[in-house]
Structure formats: C-alpha cells, structure tokens
Length: 72
Image (cartoon, rainbow, N blue to C red; front, side):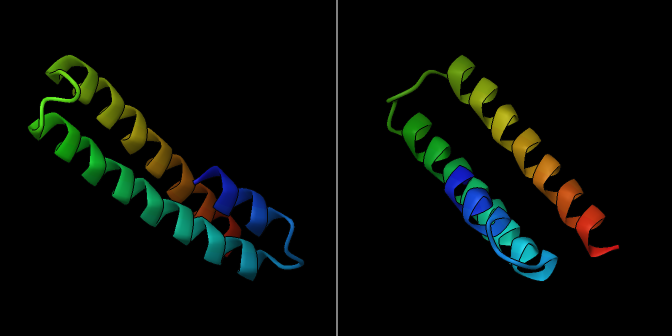
C-alpha cells in the first residue's frame, strides 16, 4: 500500500495520484483477505485478527477520504 501511495505522490498530476490511491485501497482489500486466511489457518489468533482487520479498515477509510478530497 505505502509503495503505491509513494509512487502516485511522485507523479505529476492529481489524476495519476488518485489512480495509485485506488491501487493502494485495493491492496488494503488484499491484506484483509490474507488476514482472514491467516486466521482460518490459525496463524494468528482472533484478538490479533480483529485488531489488524480494524487497522486495515481504518487505512482504507483514510485512503478513500484522500481520494474524495483530491477529486474535488
């Protein structure tokens, strides 16, 4: 996620930055999916799963807010 945001930030336009923010938001969805898998396979416990899932959801919300701001 952070690499997508960094790459987009170095682009010349808000339009390109927004594109990479969407990619980062999609990556957050992939991380969430991997958390479910890790929990199902008992690689992480339920407390860690819930805590990490909420952090990823918050990151996704923040990216979404930045996208809305830049599209105005």
